[in-house]
Length: 66
Length: 554
Ligand SMILES: Cc1cc2nc3c(=O)[nH]c(=O)nc-3n(C[C@H](O)[C@H](O)[C@H](O)COP(=O)(O)OP(=O)(O)OC[C@H]3O[C@@H](n4cnc5c(N)ncnc54)[C@H](O)[C@@H]3O)c2cc1C
Image 1 (cartoon, each protein chain N blue to C red):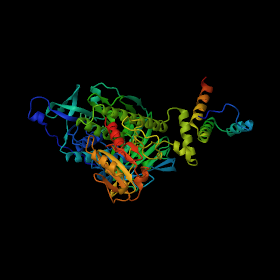
Image 2 (cartoon, rainbow over the protein chains, first blue to last red):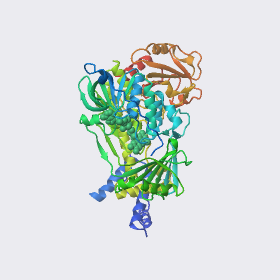
Image 3 (cartoon, rainbow over the protein chains, first blue to last red):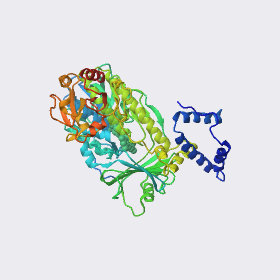
Image 4 (cartoon, protein in one colour):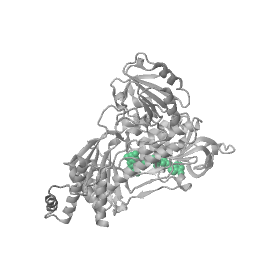
């Protein structure tokens, strides 16, 4: 079973982070919400591993509810 | 309103009230409810030699078109009972669905992309026609005693019988059944009188069904719109039915005023938005409905058995209601017949509860997911739903997430105790039907593979040449074919010369049956009377068959 990576997996983390943030530039809150939803679906399909996705979902949920 | 002329079936004053014999008559099987499920079960039992008494409170068929999408599996079952061809001839055949966003087609799906099946993925035929044809077929069977205007108003089960009170225009009388099968619909009076639980989820969203007659040359496909220009807030489903009737199903949302929506002038307003000012139609049937997903925890309670909507109900997306009810009847018929004939113990009926209980839970799971997709329950659910729709045009993966209803397919009975697990030393193509799955169809001889299994067990053996079959094993299998439970030995081959005695030998001209069963020389399947696979092996071996037969019938 694959598990969610906790350690850095990006060669240029700042670039990727800014890429995602910049994508929201100039959008309304509603548009941003839509963008995030589309992005999550695209990436989830790319990851393709249900176990990893389940772990990521749990971690994300915990980050807002804990 | 309506082009269909409802038949009125004769009520015959029952002998019990006319002749007034002493005591209460006992019959083998009482079926309460002559809907699609009760009628299917009645025919199946009658064809297996069991006398059935069917009680229905009404004297006609389903009021309103209700269930229109009749699935391939249902047609296969009805074919065995001799009514499917008439339904296909009357209905609208379809294999494809189209999903649209706004007025743009997003994608199409094909439910039966590969040809070579006796029946299409679906036909659309109004429930009243299906019931009418089933009733007419029942009336030809001496073993079906169909009693109209006979309302069951009391049920008293004991360890050996179930006694019922029946209200008729001539008064009340009693009958006793060794078994009672309640096919009395979602409000099941039998279930209510016995105070049995029926739990689940009720959905708040409302839908408007408008069945209209209109001469329009629309494609024979299922169409589902999200946010169409003619109904921009919600979704719309469109189907064609027999007699140029269309089913238009508008999602209305939670807060719609059902009484106002039902008014013909308001329905017409919606339809004019959809079909344009110039279009003309007549109303056939309309209804504003909400739905629920519920099931009984157990379908068998002593000598009372529940089937169809009485046992479980789902949302209509996916056409799983009526179709799964017909599958219930198919699963129950042969088991009940074996038990009544003393060829199996009562415990065989536990497998009905297990197999169809699991099927109901699967249908509820699927239909709840479709419902949640179509009627998102909270804002983020809608945002994600809409994201799948906007991605679907360009990204095939997102089309798989769009859920306008996962259309009914026969449920495999995973881990059924009636199935013999595969021998781990033998390997099978993952697409081939494993034990607990329905047998695939294919052309065979002058007919079809599914037509070979006519309501009894069958042993299917594949051989490149009939003459190459292991003679000793073939003889041993043929010799036990008449024992209990009886079965039909069928040899499927590409060369008929030297066909063994006692085997029904058929030619697989196209090789499709062989391929769909992942068969090699000697591959053998044991098929249940309901056309499900009970066991399979890479060679013909009589004692394995014997053991698997025992297992599948106890
Ligand atoms: C709008 C709508 C659309 C649908 N579309 C589809 C679809 O496309 N495909 C699909 O597969 N399913 C569909 N369904 C579901 C389908 O209609 C039902 O699942 C199906 O009718 C169930 O059949 P049944 O025989 O169990 O019950 P019913 O059809 O409800 O029959 C019950 C029978 O019992 C009788 N009865 C009741 N009480 C008594 C009593 N006390 N004594 C004697 N008789 C009694 C009634 O008269 C009736 O004849 C749809 C349902 C609706 C409402």
